Each structure stands twice: as structure tokens, then as C-alpha cells.
Image 1 (cartoon, rainbow, N blue to C red):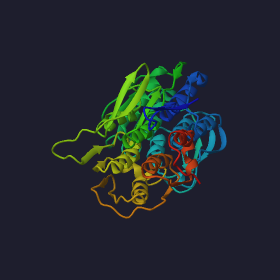
Image 2 (cartoon, rainbow, N blue to C red; image 1 turned 90 degrees about the vertical axis):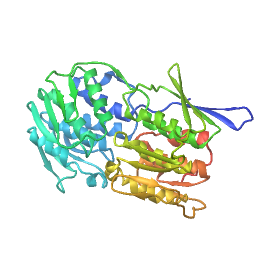
Image 3 (cartoon, rainbow, N blue to C red; image 1 turned 180 degrees about the horizontal axis):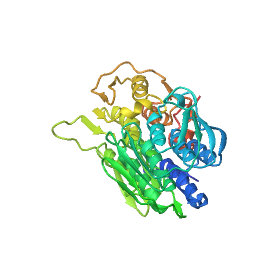
Image 4 (cartoon, rainbow, N blue to C red; image 1 turned 120 degrees about the vertical axis):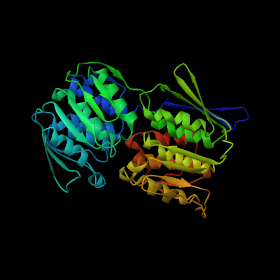
Amino acid sequence: MDIRIERVADGRERVATVLLPASKSLSARALLVASMAGCPQLVDGAADCDDTDALRRGLATSNGAVNVGAAGTAMRFLAAYYAATPGTNVTLDGTARMRQRPVAPLVDALLQAGADVTWGGEEGFPPLVIKGRRLQPFDVAMRGDVSSQFVSAMMMIAPLCGGGTIRLTTPLTSLPYVEMTAAVMERYGARVEVASDRVTVAGDPYRAAAMAIEADWSAASYWYALTAVVPTLTVRLPGLTTDSLQGDSRIAAIMRDLGVATDIDGGVITLRHRRPPLCCSCPHSFYADLADVPDLAQTIVVTLCLLERAFRITGLHTLRVKETDRLEALRTELARFGYLLRTTTDSIEWHGQRCPAETLPRIDTHDDHRMAMAMAVAAVAHGPAVIERAEVVTKSYPDFWRHLAEAFPNIILP
């Protein structure tokens, strides 16, 4: 059983033991690098979700049309992989939303490296027409502030090209993800140096290795949020470590300031509700720059509103071009619960402004798995709600609704 609910004391307190999915980010990198090393079968426990399924299908295809759906990670990583794989001839495409997500910085870097990539539609966006060839050692310039996955994609193909240097023309967004990429590559024999203005990959070829995938800290963030807003809930999460390669493990430190204690014992992390500490100079405000971990933003914003904590969160410019415009989606959907938020190009804030809440909120997930799961926390705290297009969670956490229903039966699905 991958979730177990125990009731203690007077029956109100609950202990939920939840087996989280494997890390999607680690799985994608390990599957791609292991394929280039010739040992994909040695990746143990890779995530079973829409994004990794799209990547697996892509890695098994070398000719014709490849549709990755809404899997942005697969789009970026496969584009580089195909370009550096001789004999490949594909048209790489996705959903209507994917065709609105920019990919020009990656394509420009691939062209600098000598790749054969052309636009299959509007310039700057998928679909991409790619004819693979053997690339030589490269020295390319690319922006670092659009998506760290563009940088990671170029890093991972560098050993196939005899090495490569990526010179960053703008500051790097989401550094922990680039460091994760480097760590996975090193597991398979690559030598990588990550600096503030460049990434250098030596010419050593990949070699076969085994890799086990740890549980997903991004998925854990929703259980942190639930613990923060439900005082009677304790959550046990096996398979996580605080020295994780995943940048989203930062959620433990952030949630400590929002009233969640993290205890570690024998490979199991236990989350317990605690009264949050308050800063004497600003007892109700919260500030964070989440440029390194933007995937945590929705969870943290929802939690802060539910705790009635005024806040300002910055470093979120990449959220405008994710599965949806996540800043606008947060502003729209939290208004259904009575919270009036303000957004800028790269920030979101709330200072206590309210509006009438809907009696039975109908939450639009905006075809975004992280919107669905973050807003589910609001539904748990406020009471019944309708979660529209709830199935979108299969992108990263297919069992989320089943797990949530075991712990909280007041979520209404379509």
C-alpha cells in the first residue's frame, strides 16, 4: 500500500504515511544520460508519469513525428539528443500550449554547435525539424535566464561531441537544476565544471553505471503545505533525504518558518505542525526569492494565503512561460477563495486584501499539474471545491488525488 492513514488520540489527529513518486527531474536526466551511455536498463525506479513516458517514447524513436504532449522537459532534452545523434530525422512537436513556449535559446545554441535544426512552424517555437549528425566539440553562448533546461540539454550532449563550453550571457536561473544535471552526468563518467558565467564539460565519453532515483521533493511540497494548514495532520515520507540533489528540498527550510518541523529518522522524513516563529520586526510578513526553485512558488503562495501571512515572492519570471502563466493563474484562482493578489513580471504578493469567496469554488487547473495540486491544499483548508481538469496531475504525480482522498475526503472531483 502506498498510503496509510492512522488515527491517534481522540481520533481527530491523523498520521499519513505516503510513498511519493520518484523525482521527475532526476528521472529525466538519468534516463537521457543512461541512454547515451548505452545502459538505460540500469536506471532503477524512474518516475512513472506523463513527462517521463514522453521522454521514454522519444528515446525509442529516431525517425518521423514525435509528439511529447505537454512535457516541456522532454521537448528540450530530446531536441538536443536528436540533434547530436547521427541518422535521426524527426519532427518534434507538442500540445498547442507547447507551441507557445519559447525554445529559441536552445535552438540557437544547437546551431552554434553545428546542428541541423529548422523551424516547423512559427520561428522560435515548436515544432522543430531535426536531422541528427555527429557534432564536434563546441563553444557556444546562450542565455541562462530563460530556462535552466536549455543549459542542461546542451550539457548532457557535450560528451557525445567530445566536450563543450557553454558561456552564459545572462545570470543562470534555477542553478540547483544545473547542478543536478552535472551530478547525474558525473555518475556516468563525465567531468563537469559549473561556474557563474559558464559550464565546461570535458571530452570524456559516458560509461555505463547504475543509478537509483530518489523520491520527489516537489511532490513532497504539497504534503508540507497540508501539514502547515491542518494542525491535526502528521505526515511520514519515506525515500527522501535532506542532502538531496533536488533543489526543491529547500521546501523543508521554507516551511520551517511557516510552522512545519521536519524530523529525520532512518530514511523517513516526518512532518509535524508547529506554531511558526514570528520575526519581531515584521510579525506577519514573508519574503523569498525563488529564482532557484520556481516550482515551489505555487505551493508556498497558497500556503501563505491560508495562513493569513502577507508576503512578497520574487524571482518568478520563468513562471510566465510554464504549462500556463502561473502567476496569473494563482491570482485568478486564489480570488475564488477570497484572496486578492498582485503580480508583476517576476513577482507575486499579498498584503491582506480580500474579496467575497465563492461558496463552492470551481478551480480551473489551467492544464497545469502544479496548479492542481497547490489549489487542492486550498480546497482542503476551506472545504469542498470542484477541481476541474483534475487529471492533469498525471504529468508528475499520478496518484495524487487517490492519496489526498485517503487523507481528506472533502475534495470534490468532476
